[in-house]
Length: 91
View 1 (spheres, rainbow, N blue to C red):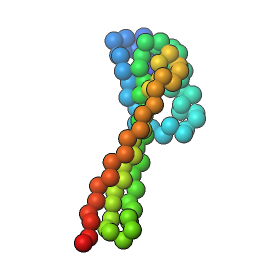
View 2: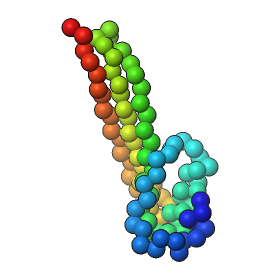
View 3: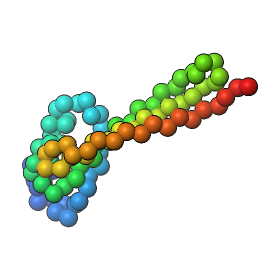
């Protein structure tokens, strides 16, 4: 990540939110390196997944799962998950 190589860029940046895959280890290594270079910067890595499913023949549902992990100083400080379900039911 170029921001880790140049910590003087955006000196007033307090939070960086990135939409990416949490399972990509090379990318996450760069995120943690950025956190070590900028100790006070909060970095949130967000991952979204959606899937269409049928629930017992009652119609189609769309399930959206959102998770994000927060890093500060190169260490994970929190993790949260959310799940939304939308759909139509046939009677």
